[in-house]
Amino acid sequence: MKIALGVTGCIAAYKAIEVMRGLRNAGVSVQVILTRSAAEFVTPLTFEALSSQNVITEMFPQGQNRDIQHISLAQSIQLLAVVPATANILGKFAHGIADDFLSTLYLSTPTPVFIAPAMNVEMWRHPAVRANVEVLKKRGNHFINPEPGMLACGMEGEGRLAEVGSIVDRILDLLNADRSLAGLKVLVTAGPTIEDIDPVRFLSNRSSGKMGYAVAETAAGRGAEVHLVSGPTNLKAPQGIQLIEVRSAAQMKDAVLQRFPAMDIVVKAAAVADYRPVATATEKLKKKDEDVNLHLVPTDDILELLGRQKKDQILVGFAAETKRLLESARDKMARKNLDLLVANDVSAGVFGSDTSTVHILSRSGEPEILREQTKHAVAGRILDLAVSIRQSSVSNK
Image 1 (cartoon, rainbow, N blue to C red):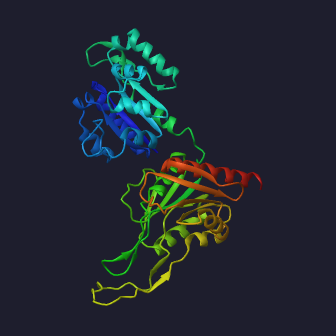
Image 2: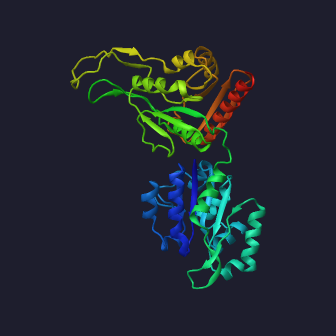
Image 3: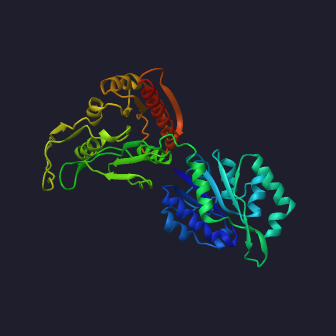
């Protein structure tokens, strides 16, 4: 689960640090955006140290414009929260003014928006501000009103930022509106495996792990107890999940089989090596002026083993193909006793991308095609279908 946290320029900006901390403790990934005025009250370094992510402060930072950042961020978050929100940003939002990153992100964001205003009492009561708030509420934006109390300017009245705990709770309530996986255990595998040849060389593949991590994060956000078995990646594990780090296909098999009987849904998104060296050299193999034959043997097919052992579990597999996509996917689904299979054409080199075009096959009906969707959007749809299959299975018993 990921949100964008916009921080605007007022004395209450320091409280956004505690809001971010509360969200992080709840397993939410937080991308912070500081307006220029906010950076006068709190430094980007403080947020970066606590969020483990770069803080966005500029619309066009040098060297970081390969992607349209406000668009890509808007498509990857489940919520935009603005804490604190000044009268200035309320005016921009209400009238569609996009002259910095935060106001541009607001116009680009299709997900819910949560706003926590803070300002002087007379500003909060001004007819222009009240009108802007009403406009934004009518558009479906969610508000938590400021509280009465002593303000930084020395005046007393409404305008003080709502309590941090209340803000965090409201944000989590909005994020967790979908609790379809509450009480369920979900096992996800992600990333590549590594098969050692000698102490310095190995066999692996191009899997980034992004898809599996997106499934794990989305499942956790929907209330599941998530176990993520991951091969080596450069990704940070989502908070609120149980991470089991493995290296080889054999280690992944052991970790998965150990946990499988207790699971309700299993999503095998990892790209497990199909072959491994028959033996690993204990010393580095020296280069020679002659051909070298590397003896490989098949690894155990983890997905096939799960298909044989499964009882009530919903089992989801992935297929990366370079030709005859649907034909190969249907064959794999039948052979391995899967409930769902997510197939994608990797001939164009999609590994590491933040978006995917996939075909989702089920046991009944035509494949569902998701075109150029974010990993989180694909993850959400996979879990939607898995829950639907499980509910149908339970009701038929």
